[in-house]
Image (cartoon, rainbow, N blue to C red; front, side):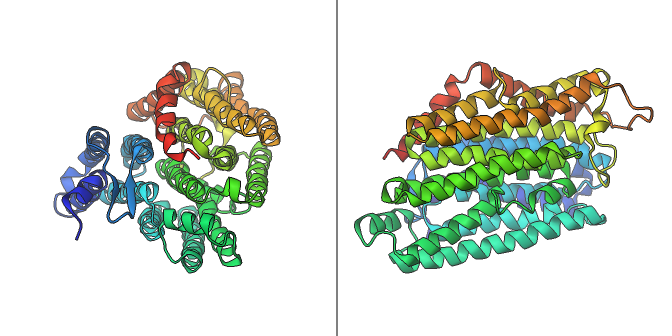
Length: 480
């Protein structure tokens, strides 16, 4: 039976799960409260964030299956910030599309709790439970526009890919258990480092497990689902999907690499992971250049950004891990701000979100356009925005570890990406309004969401020290 300490350790997740159940009951029995559920979701996320920050971090809980430490706290805060911003933009968006329902926010909270459990797991079985708690609500959310072909296609593709990923992860866990006799990451690491080393069973199990995580990260060659799912999902869901599952998967890889110490065990995995990272950066950036739909462009952009983040995972240790944690926080605000503006500049969710439709909006909607400009510059890695600092930390960690080639290729790919990010800015300010001006909605809440995210991108970029110190403090747990 779980102890009171165990339950207190998972109090933020319990708050989210309890709130999700309450929202379903409100939707069923008090339909008039539907308009208040977005605000209640934001309150639940804020309360869960307070619980994680204010209460002591108990460390190992549930018989060593989860570990609530500084890494968990850092990741939980960024996940809950993403939930808050998603709920903020979802309210006006769902009302405009006439699809508002309490179940949307319940599924959102359940998915967030699954991601938080994943990031805290030190046992592969607990991790798998968190993965499924994250994935199953997202299957439904991606098909939330179930009366449209594009929505059903997005839901089906994510479901099929998610099922394959879960199968890879489950089979990989089984093989790792067979190789080490335990599903605990620390025990597996000790067995490998002080035992037989890289046996065939271990290598295959590890490859399948990492492959399942790579599906969630949309890394090459596991990226095929991302553009269609991003395009067909409701824009707030796309925003959530673009940051939360990826962050949880990256933290899982950080914990796994730290426990197995693969950098010193064998150099083969470094080369394999390096090839995947560079291939993701290159393919993502090159294919993004030819995209006409801004959501598909950001899908390929996300593939490239996960390639950058993988450089930090490869480096590992406190230096690489701190860079990855900072990158996750930065990427959250950059993407959330961009998708909030896309949700605002959307005429019809059943049609492509063309970049050309944004022509002239820089002067028609100055606040939203400025927010999108800030996010585009940051995603491109232009100083003084937070995206520059995030990329600098990742590439510096690679140079410090002697992986100069990874850093150089990353910088080159970042320069290539500037073309398609700046193309959006060009459309906003340097192209006239089209003859048939798109009937974009007006929403103060969506504009405010984008403005807050863009302000965070600017302020953290100008004053990165507090965030860097928090990431470095958490990453001390990954000291080799």
